[in-house]
Image (cartoon, rainbow, N blue to C red; front, side):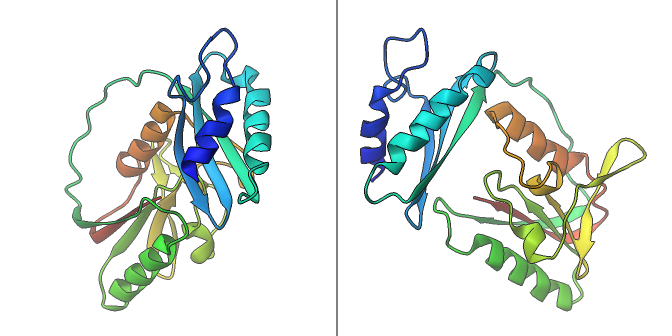
Length: 209
């Protein structure tokens, strides 16, 4: 199915380029969940806002594939990230990573169940939800809204059921579409790791789609 999607997108070009977006290696992160396709198109950061028509056309083309019921295409800006150094997280006893290369397999549910089980054993638990396409951890823990700032420097993690969480969904407005570029995602993840008033924990669950 991914090959069919790539073949169908070969008719699209970024203005000014002779080769199509597939041959230019601009299409990535193809994911199909319950006949719904997700993918990213990498474009230059200074023209991304001008290429919404390209994104819309890509979605239309993909939806014309009989096996695909819907499509979500994200414009990912290409911009060289500035190198930053961060100190180790000494206040966290252990990290537990919950990840998969496939969507819809229960990563969020597994993460919350593990966190709740350890919390009932008296462990201090935190969850870092790094899913940029559909952060669902806040909903599973019945949390909403944006994270608050502490001392104008650190983000205050949200908390329910004795579990503190920080999520991409806590940094942006709900139900608002965003253009994520690689460096922007990395910056958001580093902010959630190092600029959050986590406190001291025995386990930190890092969840990523």
